[in-house]
Image (cartoon, helix red, strand yellow):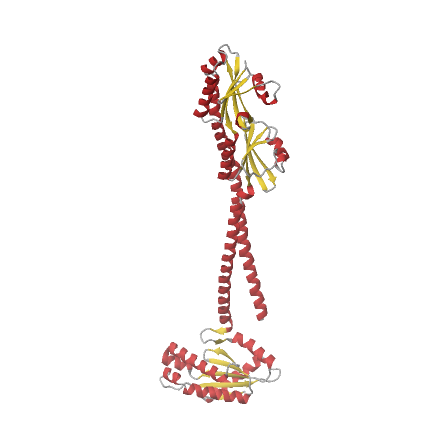
Length: 481
């Protein structure tokens, strides 16, 4: 019976544990997924586009100023008059170009003459351009397009071949005849530093890519190690869609070598390049994942604490319930239901046992004379004396209001001796005498010894008859059935 109760309690514990753990874990998973979806949506729709547009604006700001200055240079009467007059005083154009370079903090400034082919810059004449020289093809390509200006990226021969963004502007005389090309240059490293600054600030990789997919400028330590995005793992599969010229920004996703990547792009018409901003989704979600793990651990600990409280409460109330089911809460002894179980245990162990049924004589009169509270105290003290005399191996049960049944593992003679000891203890107990105002409390007893094949009902019936006989003979009497 006890084993079955323990198993039932164990199953209840398991059920509550599974319910609490699964409930908390599912709730945490749902919260994590909601936070993940919300952050992902925020990155795709807000954060990435905002970073892209900020960088685009910075690049535009860096480019619009030199475009404007190159336009002023192309329309400057000094430049026109100096070229028309035959380019006689080189120092004048040199001084002019030096002034432009330093005043506006440009990397370089230049003028290329259509008449002489001289390439003037702030330090004098760099060289004479030639149509057959591949490095001079930019000039002939530009002048053949009849565009007012263009931006090109090339090495700067005047500055140790450093990559430079050149803003080239056509110069015409007053009759709209081509005099040459003037302009300024921005160091490409300046744009690269801008991208690196944004990479550190926003933890995103940033690239400037031409229409062929070649990475022209990138921040330092980026994920894409290939020089062309078409050949890079993951992004290469969507490169054709990214490199479609459009003035509408695009959002893309791909699986890179370090996780799932989110990408947004914008075409820069001035450079004929694409600005790409790439965010590692796994890195962005790292904080949410860490919070999920932390919340799960906290939930696990709290769930264990809750389980501990639940188990303690269950055990407490289970013990209370058992006490109410099998015991008499007022007297602190077993009740009749528990008597049957104890009787069967005694019967299984040994058939040599007896029942002693005690009854407090004239208990109704004690109640009337001393009141219910005092009567209960007398009854409790009587029970305590019975327990002391019968020993711990015996079972004491409250039978009726003032009756107590005792199962003792002795024969009828020994049971009679025990009953006499109980009578003497009750009659002479100082506490009982004080409670009853020196009136002697007396008890009668009926004894029955177990007969072969006798049931609990038969044996208790004989003990009750013996008690009835003892009470009919007078107080403090013992009879054996």
